[in-house]
Length: 83
Image (tube, rainbow, N blue to C red; front, side, top):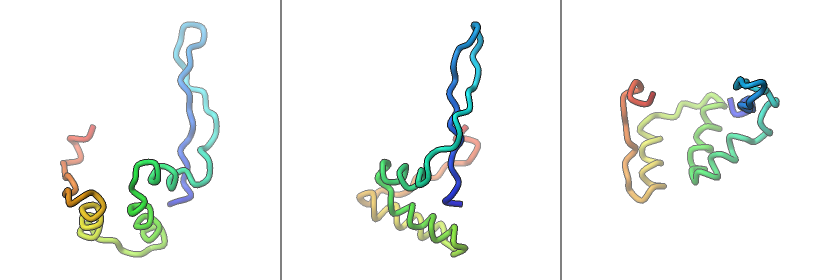
């Protein structure tokens, strides 16, 4: 799971059309860098555990979020409201 890297795609204009140009995969360690940049390395460490097959409960994730975000609770929304 943590070895997954996003495809890097540029949208460019050619001959008056917008096309996607595939540039390969993101660099190794991409997910870790994104977590670090977002200030949520606590989640990266949980993702490592999940990738190793360990069960991490939503309660544990909520508690870690709250602890690492000044007591703020993790917001929950129905999945359809995210799109």
